[in-house]
Image (cartoon, rainbow, N blue to C red; front, side, top):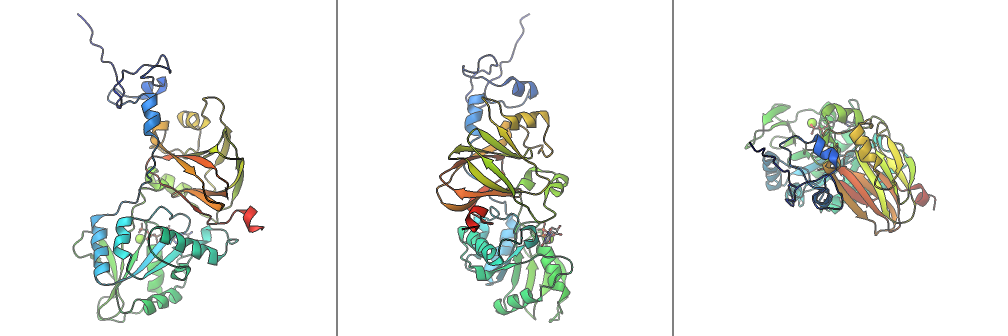
Length: 387
Ligand SMILES: Nc1nc2c(ncn2[C@@H]2O[C@H](COP(=O)(O)OP(=O)(O)OP(=O)(O)O)[C@@H](O)[C@H]2O)c(=O)[nH]1
Ligand SMILES: [Mg+2]
């Protein structure tokens, strides 16, 4: 009786897979073949190289219910209180959301100021935040941004006054990404609140036309403040970690800059989550702003050896995502720096590094789906602030 052997083929190009000769079509590293179950789709190394370059950072997912709320906000000329987490918010904008609020008055609460060093001035941070909002096509100035470090005792009566004077009798919608501090703000607001209406003081209601529960606080006889559920963190590092891992990584104290240098043929890893390389440009000093628990480690790249992916394979990093364990679980972005001055490259939800722009090309490996961003420096590099 003859034996039927099923030949496995590349899921992309269809060429039969082989592990003998890397120079011939269909070559796949033996370890991928060993690890894969019978029903896994496999790619030859050549196709895999191609498909792991991804140039379109993800946007946060917004639900239909959230858009229903925003449509009401738009229709009623509401006042928007947009709460962001100063540690990381740069890729948290959704064009869908912004379409609804672009013509509404917006006050930004840039929260968690305590996580950023005191050495950077409030004025610079406010301008930085306004700039990021303008990049997202919301035309704000530094005047529209307030910095806060919210806690269970902080007094927000000055912010309540700003809102009262700017909302012109209209409803207020408190919106923003998950975990940015919206509830913390609303709780602080409630500490100085007296009900000016005949409505219930605070009510958790199913928002009309949706299935989401929302806090409603009367502001006068006919207008309310609504706290909207946060926008998803699906494009943040949080999206590829378990809740426990995310809690363990998230910064608990003010970030400190870790100085490093990077040259060609070197790679810097941020735990087992992100790797950066310098593809073009001179040796560059970088300041790394990552939570303390994220270990910053430099490797030399020798030949075809890649200590980052080898380390993931051997499980030798402290933080590894179950969703980013192998090379094909990572997106690769090449950031070509054309601007001069202080620049940042950040990984949403994990941290960023800053440097002086000098025509470098950085290659960033981040778990698939996690957004990276490049922008002017949130905290100007030391070399520039001395000048
Ligand atoms: N370090 C620091 N932590 C803060 C600050 N404000 C809020 N937090 C913490 O951030 C986390 C999220 O705060 P919440 O107020 O629940 O955030 P939220 O925007 O309501 O989040 P969702 O309900 O998920 O959309 C909590 O653990 C807070 O204790 C702040 O100013 N500094
Ligand atoms: Mg909340």
